[in-house]
Structures are given as structure tokens and as C-alpha cells.
Image (tube, rainbow, N blue to C red; front, side, top):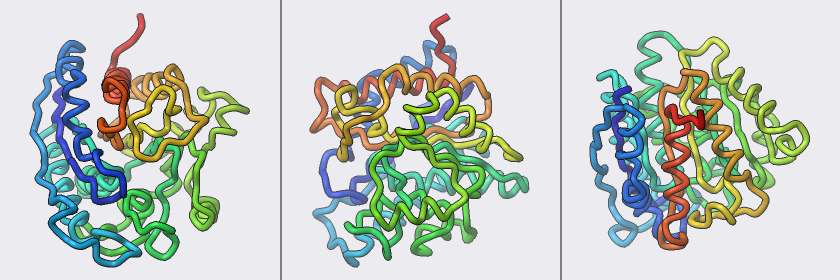
Length: 301
């Protein structure tokens, strides 16, 4: 496989500094060399330039840094679109989860031109389905999934002048355990397939992933994978900005990626919310590299 890695060091979508260094941490943990060892051709496209928080005011407190985040996501969308047009597989490295708006827009544009919908498997402790009207913080990293589904400010939903980028019935949320009260209603009222940690505990991860993959591949060209490292229990992934106890284990995280790899239907991968400032010996970035490898073909046997 030809793989193009793009760093999107965006930290304006949340309040805890340091996540802008996530792309460097994941690269330092050996992402490119690990993927090359699997036989892939890897091209590193460097980082998109992102303005820092000190350069501007956050603006509307209901949707902070909207202008700056939208600009970054538009550039990311252009770069991801060109990557898939070129026939390469895109890996987006965050940065906070706001970057998903750009990744999804770029992939969705190509397949919209081919009249094919795409699915999404969103692996996260949080649903990220807030809008400016429901968000208690105004932080955009809690809004990108909603934006990809067509809900929220037009600066995010209408990149490339169409919306939505994803169809809710072809999307699955995996690993949920921390939702805002108004966001909870949005998830329940949507057609998104939502799987909480209770679902994983009761039915097992294999069953949850089988249902998620079925939804994401039902009538689609394939699916994008959005991996927020806070889905993993903070004992295994301490370097995240919004840690929530009770997450999936190291092996469960690898099983998710191994099952995704088996489908041969993944169209793009993004890894977000790695914060080396609060990590321990780059453990979270190293785990991210291992999970990317599992998603891209690494097997035990």
C-alpha cells in the first residue's frame, strides 16, 4: 500500500495545551519505519501550519476559534482529497479531534464524485456530537462528528459546499463512556450505531465490532476510521487531554484494529488527542503506532 502521512498539529479545539505536539510524538515513536517494515511505501507530507492560540482571540464562546479551525480543516481536506485522488492511503495525525472535519471532507469528496457514500467507525470515549447550541464548553473538539453528519456551523459542515459528509446509518461510535446530557439526546435521536462500554462489557468487543463494520460497509465504498486515544483506559494511554477511567484495554484496542484490517475496506485513518506533555515516556504515542500497524496489516501469525 502507498501511505501518505499528514500532520495536523491543531490544538485550538480544546483547552489543554500540548496536543499540537502529537504528530511529532507519533513520528518519534516510529510510525513511518514500522509501516515500512510491513512492506508499505510511506511518504511523509509534513505538517499543515496552524496558528497558535496566542495569535488570536477565541471569538464566540459557544464555538471557540471557529475561523481558525475551519481554515485548518479546509487545508487538511484539500490535502487529504489530493492524497486519495493520487491513489494513496491517508493517515492524519492530530492534534485534537477537530481535524476529523477535514479528513472526512477530503475522503467524502472523492467518493461523492463517484456517487458512492462512505461509512465511519469513530472510536472514542466521547461522541463528539455537540453543536454550538448544546456544548457546555464551546470547544470544537467536541463537535466534529456532528459536523461531519451535517450539524453545526456552516464553516465546518459545508467544506467543499456539500453536506453531510457522512450518513448516520453508516456510522458507528465505539467505546462511549462520557457524554454531555444534551449530547446524549442527540446520539439517541440519530441513526448512528452507538456502542458504549456497557455494550462491550455485556456483549463482547467482537460482537460490537461486527455490528460496527456491518453498518459502515452497508452499501458504501468503505469507511474512514477515527481513533481518539482517550478510548483506551488512561492506565494504558495516559497522554490524552480528556482521560476517562474504564476504557478499553491494550488488547481490545488491537482487536478493534485487527478486525478493521481484516475487512480491507478502510479508506483513511486518523489518530488524534496524543498529548506528549502529559504522557509517560511517550507510551501513548507508542501505543498509537502499534494500533496503526494492526490496522494496516500487522498480525501475530
